[in-house]
Image 1 (cartoon, rainbow, N blue to C red):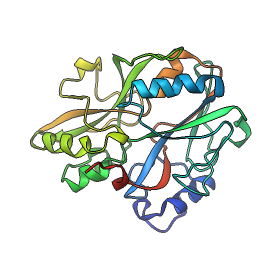
Image 2: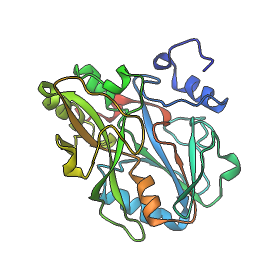
Image 3: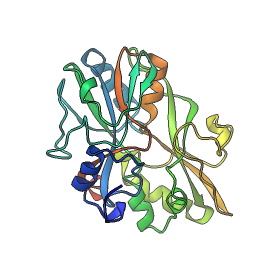
Length: 264
């Protein structure tokens, strides 16, 4: 990274410029106070079903914006380009991951409809303000994410398991974490589960399916939130002919403020 400022102090515009110029880094902690989002681009003939899927599974897939077919801009970040301004993308064909480029201009298609989905990085500002430690940030890691055995409600051809993000939280602050995130339903809201990971079909917390393993402190309890990587598990299960997503942990940083998504 060529920036002289710490990632957290960068404006979203400056962060996006760095990504456009080739910087590739997980975005947790970047542009503090600004909303980060997940990206999913699908052919137009799959877009209605995906929108319906999101409506039926809002905890995992809260939609913040949808483009017109072929569109690559959003009012969440005027002047930004959704094809170049993320640090890393994923390209999918028939449910198989075929590439992880740092831009997708040459892969873009006029029939692609792009969905921007709320990200749990956004509510981390509320957790920090409430005094809840963020262990992955302390350890310089991306948040761990896990596929669960909890099946989302299907929509048309789309089906698949919920993905969750996990943050170790001190036991005496779990209620605080629940209250802080419940006020932000547009970015996943309250946890879906606290405690035993086996209840979600998760075998080992030190082996996440996405992101990095994070070490808990003594007295921490694992807390799980719905995760915007859920659509990638759905792509693998449902196998649409083509799709583009962000790489897990490598988000699109918008000009919207985290506080814009608090309901009180």
